[in-house]
Structures are given as structure tokens and as C-alpha cells.
Image (cartoon, rainbow over all chains, first blue to last red; front, side, top):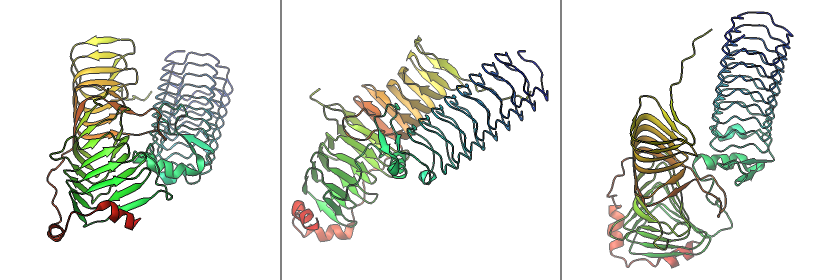
Length: 339
Length: 149
């Protein structure tokens, strides 16, 4: 039945187990409660088809067109839907456990109450979809586009969210004991669900890997308008310093665990920052005369408003870098002279 | 059956090695090893991929290993950036993904140069304040900070 023209056909409850329907036209077909287990529906056209309650376990729906299809309560466990088009599809209360949706387009779809346990949603487009009360336990949503989707009541425990595109507030009403923000989805960056919104916000600006602001740490602030020249700052271990001032020809020594943050108004010109701490730059850092301007940081983050013109000498254990779109750099990165 | 627009793409699969220049009008995905120059609208280097050469693209995303000269509009990096690499881009993104020290991190940089955006030099020192400060001795910053804390 490969390439068969079954447009509008009434196939309600039919036994189509293992059928080869690749490239077939099943537009507007009625397939309610049909048995399509292990069917080959590769690139099939199922636009507007009614698959309510159909059994599609292990079916291959890669590249299929399911736009506007009704898959309510369908069983799609371990189905392959990579690159499938599912815009405006109704997947309400469908069982999508272990289903593969990589690069699929689920924009404007309805997934209310759907079971997406361990589903693979990497690089999927799920814009403006309804995921209310959906179960995404252990789902892989890395690099998934979730903007404007409704996630209220969705279960996200164990889900992988690295690179997910959403607004932090979308996670306000989700249920999650913990989630994983690691790039490899290997659990190396798990966070408690109660911190999800804040952690997501930090990940959006590339700061997830940075130490959070800790109120119990010693915090110091050099405010706008202050000018310091030829000064030597020695920042004690674990302290946090925010600079919104103008510093020229200064030397700043960072102790271990120290966080030096140059705010949007902060400018460091001709300065040298030495030591094992974290450096966050939203302002400007210009090396001049003394080079390298930055020596041995454990982490260097340059935000979208940041400008850095400098040589960075990495420590023996390489620096962790993060740069945000919009930053300006003229950076020479050098490995440790000890290596 | 409705016509769905085909997404054309050039793919260098995992386990494939290619030596030479590629010029393409469609995006290129490299999961194998490519040694040579690349010119295309977009280049994606996957985790298993590596590209060594002169890359000239509009969009560049790498999770693999790269080295050479990269000229691109937007660059999204993870993986490894080898020695003697120069990246020239309008916009660059590198994300940190891990909490805590000692974990794996997104990008490791060898000796390389990054030219991103249009960094303007020579900031203007606040003039009035600078004049006031000229009359003063260089501040003892440690004590200033200690007072603040």
C-alpha cells in the first residue's frame, strides 16, 4: 500500500498492523481505533485524519504530515515522529511514552493530559501548544522551542531542559521534583524543582554554571561615578564584588571562589585581574599596557552588553567560558604556560 | 497529497572523512571529519564531527571539534576549539551548562582569537570626577572596601 491514495477513506477499527503505508495519502481518512501497530507511515499524508484512540505503537511516522489530525487518546508509545508535522494536531490524553519527536513541529497542538514520559523532544517546535497537566517525566526537551506554550500542571520531574527556549514564567505552575540542565543530559547539572524558574532564568543568560549570588557571602559594591586609578584590590576568598565604577591601571587579585562582576556601567581600563575566581562582565574591560589582562580565571562570562579587549591566560584547569549573543570581543585566549 | 517543501541539506555522516573544499548553497551538517575549506549558508558540526579549515558561513553551530579560521554572522559554540583558531563573527554565543566546579564544561579553547561584534576602544573617563581624584592620593582600596562591608 506504499503511496496508496486513501484520501477520506473510512478505515475505522481496521487491522493495519505492520502495513506499509509509506508516502500514502490518508488525508481526512477515518482511522478511529484502527490498529496501526508497527505500521510504516513514513512521509504519509495524514492531514486532518481522525486517529482518535488508534493504536500506533512502534509506528514509523517520521516526516509524516499530521497537521490538524485528531490523535486524542491514541496510543503512540515508542512511535517515531521525527520531523513530523503536527501543527494544530489534537494529542489530548494520548499516550506518547518513549515516542520520538526530534525536530517535529507541534506548534499550536493540544497535548493536554498527554503522557510524554521519556519522550524525545529534542529540537522539536512546540510553540503555542497546550501542555496542561501533561506528564513529561524524564522527557528530553533539550533545545526544544516551547515559547508561548501553556505548561500549567505539567509534570517535569527528571526532564532535560538544556537549551529549551521558553520564558521563565512559563515554569511557574509546573510540578517538578528535579530537572536536568546538563548539555549531555547525564544528570551532571540537576537542580531542585523549587528553583526551576530562577535556574532557568540563569541558564538563559548563560549563568547557570556560575555560582549563585549568596547573601551570606561578603558583598562589596563600587558604585557609578567613582574613579579609581593605580589601586590594588585583593579580594578575599569567597567574596563578591560588583563594580559600576571606572577603574584605570588597577590590579585586582581574586581569591578562590571570588566573584568579580563588572556591571553595565563599569569600565576597567588598563587593569589586570589575576586569580582563580569567576569574572562576569556586563560592562567594559580594556587591556592596555599590562598583558595578559586576565590571568587564571576559573570562569569568564561576558553578557550581551559586555565588551572585552584583552588576552586571557587560562589556568592549568581550563577556564569555563560563556558568551552571550550581543557581546563584543577582541579576545586572545591562551592556554596555561604550565601545560 | 500536499506538497511539503523539501529541506535540502548536505550531510557528512559519522565515520566519513573528507579532505578538500566544499562550496554549497544549502546548509551542511558534519558528523564525520572534514579537512578543508567550507563555504555555505550554514554549517552544523555535531558532537561526533570535526572541521579543520577555513569556514565561511552565515550561521555556524558546533558541538564538535573545530580549528582554523571561521568567518560567520552568528556562532553558537560548544565542544572544542583547537589551537591557532580565529573566529570572526557578528554574534557569538557560548553557554555554560553545569553547576558546580569540577564538572564538564561546554567549550574548551586552545590558543585562539575571537573577534566578535564591534568592540569600541577608548572609554571616556568621567571628567569631573577624574579631576577631583587627581588631587587625591591613590585610594587604599582594601580599607575602603572593608568599611563598606
